[in-house]
Amino acid sequence: MSDPDSAQPAAGRTSADDDGGGGGRTSAEVTERGPVDATGESLHPAARAKRTEHVGRFVPFAAGIAALVIALVLGIVVALRGLFEIDEEWAEDIFTLRGPIGDLFAYGMNALGGGVIGVLVVPITITVILLVVRRPWAALYFVTASAASALIVQLLKNLFGRSRPEDIIVLSDFGSFPSGHVANAATIAVTIGIIVPRGWVWFWGVVYTVLMAISRTYLGAHWITDTIGGAMVGAGAALLVWTVFAQRMERERLTRAAEIAERNRAFAASHVTPPAVPRA
Picture (tube, helix red, strand yellow):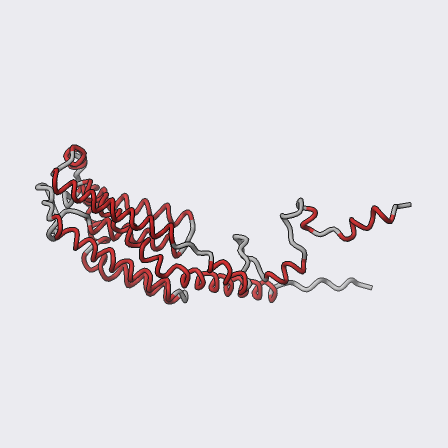
């Protein structure tokens, strides 16, 4: 015969007790907090509001300022010193790789990062996609960050007026430092990584930026230090602008996630096969 005293705790035990006191939730807690998405984030309006309030601004602001300061200091050093040894060595090595395959890659990246495609087609396409998926604050953030990055690039180009390599094989505007193509690539990489916070998005963003830097030096449009400066400008501009839109974008992202989760729940509920009726 079982001991009623020992049976009582078992009957009243919650899932949190089974998980060691903090890993589970009772059904009442789940109802109070609302649905939970695949990453474990509560999608209840109150929980979303609380999370939005905790979106930090100091870290992206400090990182953005640091990146722009690095670009500025690098530009000053370049203007005072001239070419670095790594500039000349990298140029010599990368020029030896020129050939049909390399040309196809480099000219393709040149078109993708500049001209009509880079300046109009790519930004407009990304903006339209963000608007279609109902992320207007994210779209405004992307446009603002791209414009800020381009403006800073032009200011620094005119400030330092660095000469481009003599072996350049494409048409380019005035000023070698910093690289506008790389700055644009870095801005896209960081903004999309912030809008869609997934590891694979950041990975391919970094790959795209590095490939753009390699292509610019391959074409002789920039020294390697120009591409480093461009990456700092692009990333710094994206981070600084993010501090202005951070809370609105986070609220928008979580609201959109809640809508998708509710839609998926309703879809799943409507496609549940009713249990079979047992035969008499």
